[in-house]
Image (cartoon, rainbow, N blue to C red):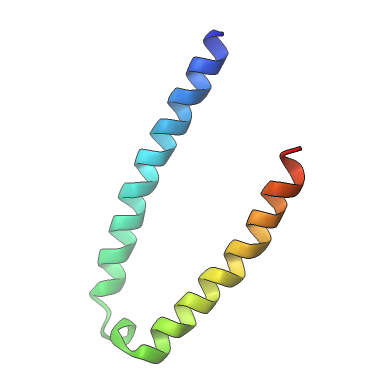
Length: 64
């Protein structure tokens, strides 16, 4: 039971840390003028989707 509590705590810490990382990356990219161009926003969205789909498929496949 103690292991489960530590695992949940580690997951909560990971979630909070990812919020700070996401916010920092967002603000850093917001300072770049090239990221305000619609074409670059579509490019970054495409890259994000292209990375997300295989990683989600991997997680789903190996979580059984």
